[in-house]
Image (tube, rainbow, N blue to C red; front, side, top):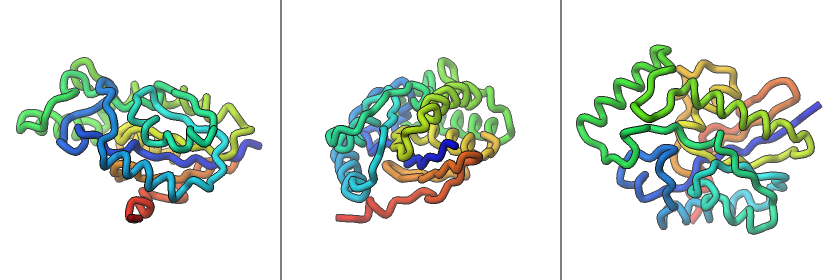
Length: 206
């Protein structure tokens, strides 16, 4: 029977995060100084966990967030299925009154169950779910990897947590997050259980 512990984190802060600029699958940005500090804090708190494998998205901000673990020699794999949701024409755009109205509307659509709604050139939650399930098949397809570190993105992480916990994607906003926050999920061979919810204790260490 496959048993697994998944440590799922969001990437550290980027400059676009700090500035409130829309950053999805189409923006391959670097961590800023604060993000690198968060990466270091997370590493210090969890470096003794015996991770068998690391899975990251295809965007470099996820690799930069857990690079110290890779430097230990832990094998890692990029899965584009873990990429952030694509926000299409809004990628790289600063927050404006018009943008905020558009985002409020699409969030309302999603909460109301219109999960095929998306921005022009972007992705819907239903589309992201398809690729996330493919990534999950890869991750769960290795029973020998008992303890796994996954670094991904805010909106995509919320959707993945819905999938793991058996919730509708309409409940994605019940999973709060910030940069480099941790969700720990245990798979007992039958079901996934979130045992550590939105943990940011490591970020409080100086």
